[in-house]
Image 1: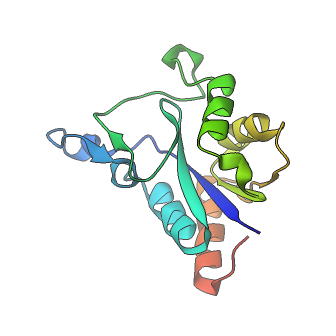
Image 2: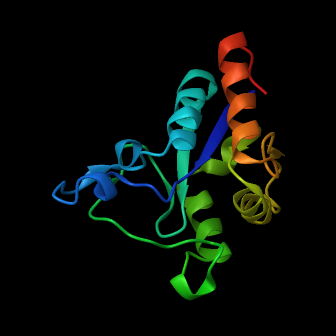
Length: 150
């Protein structure tokens, strides 16, 4: 059963540490501890993984982010990507071909992903949604240590 893992992006980006860095691969652009841990999980257990960016939508780890940005689903004023645009990306990128999707991110991201995929026959799991960040990270780390996916 093919597994897609969707990792939420993070607010901490490489440009916060080094503003001189130019365009960067998405997998390297997000530098917060939660993203790094979730990336490790996705690389280990997923048949495929993507990042959900509030600005760009579903992006491959190799996607080049040109510069820093600050867009979030939590603040409508930042003009995040819409549900309908995300659904179009799912179809175009064939993310609906997976039997199961594991979401590694908070409730805000999990709820959006559930809405996006509701018209597709895909099982969605969000094992850390709604948990405090420290507990969520401990759960992911535990699964990595045990070599046991959610």
